[in-house]
Image 1 (spheres, one colour):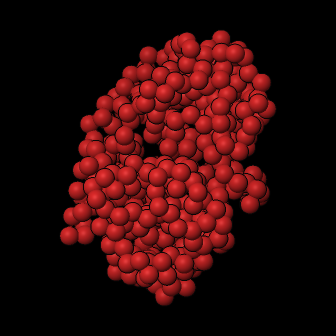
Image 2 (spheres, rainbow, N blue to C red; image 1 turned 60 degrees about the vertical axis):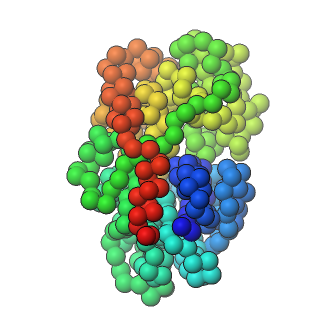
Length: 375
């Protein structure tokens, strides 16, 4: 197979696709990733071939590109981003994507959820099978429809009819069945798989003692430096060991922390979660999936996009507590972390979901399924 993978230019969008792409490569297939020109080096850094098309933008500088996003309430954030990206990015990206597909003739298109409408449009236009990795919502129960986000405007530019939902040959989901069941029955095209969770032997900064607290705000909302400082203060006040990753756009030296709390730009999440007793995060799906697979309790401070949605369902399943951003003082965060460490009920719920994930088929089975779509 010649697989064209499409991703928005952000680590949270790319990361779940990386092991899938490497599994495809291991099976002897070709994989090329289409993304924003400014994000090509990031894709190449994880060992994948990439081509830049459309406008140059990045999610780790999205708040600088679209500063009005800071005024959007969390419950409206997903729709805001869908509409704003559609207005500024979608039409030129999809036009370039059409030309790329016609020049390279892939046999399968693989899109991550946020680029699912792009994969759908080009798949329809060029009569190619397309597959989409699911987001937090169960496929068929989407938070933001193609119509609501304005995606039909771009479809019209390509001569395609209007549509309401993305309808791929496969929805590839990495959430456990209990998570998906909160939305309703899965679509017949949904397939669930587990992402690799094998940790390396690399040392994890800050993991000198237990309880060990891991904190991250991902790659977009890590610009909320006051919250990062409050988290560091909360870990310090609790007397715990900790690691706070601040992202590649932040300088760790700008954050004062006690010796028992390490501050780093980046440490592989799978390595940290293998040792963490609790995770504090913003509620990005990549962070949440990692914690679920590791059976790690979560404290969520949802800041935007899909994060409030993710946080609420994690709370419903008993694996997380929510601290609203306005309430995220060091004292409030310390209390939430202490509760997560001490709660047997939360740990039991985490163990249940961890077993669900461990029972899912691996990516070797996914590759076999994708091969069947193109044979």
